[in-house]
Length: 125
Image 1 (cartoon, rainbow, N blue to C red):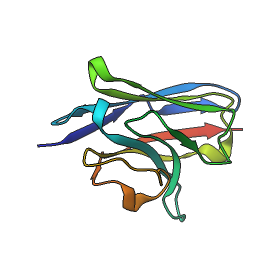
Image 2 (cartoon, rainbow, N blue to C red):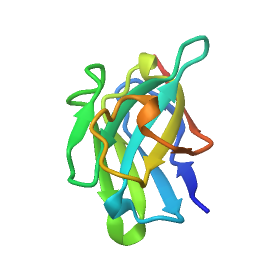
Image 3 (cartoon, rainbow, N blue to C red):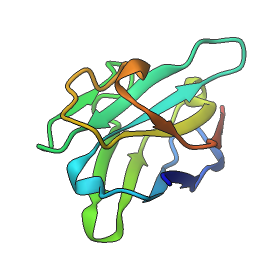
Image 4 (cartoon, rainbow, N blue to C red):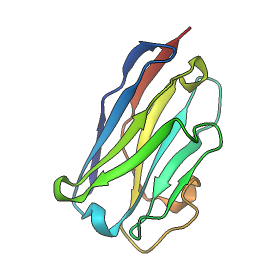
């Protein structure tokens, strides 16, 4: 049984940093494609960043240079370091995973099979 549990969200002011974590169970993160998505109120879910099993990484243009994705395969955990946060980063952030096969369209929801419940990030100006 695959489970993804996100943590690390919170309320911060613009310019601050947060680190989100996604603890995975039921598969090995080393062989999976994983990603972070977010959904703001009234908006569609969007891909933020993703990393696959060969460590290929993709970022959305809106977060390039500010966000960094990483995996700790020893602890089966995915991270999202978010720096220079902006009010427009406010959203519910989801972790996603696909343990089956190598994915390259890492910002597309259809590339993933399993999803976490989300962690809220709120950035005030």
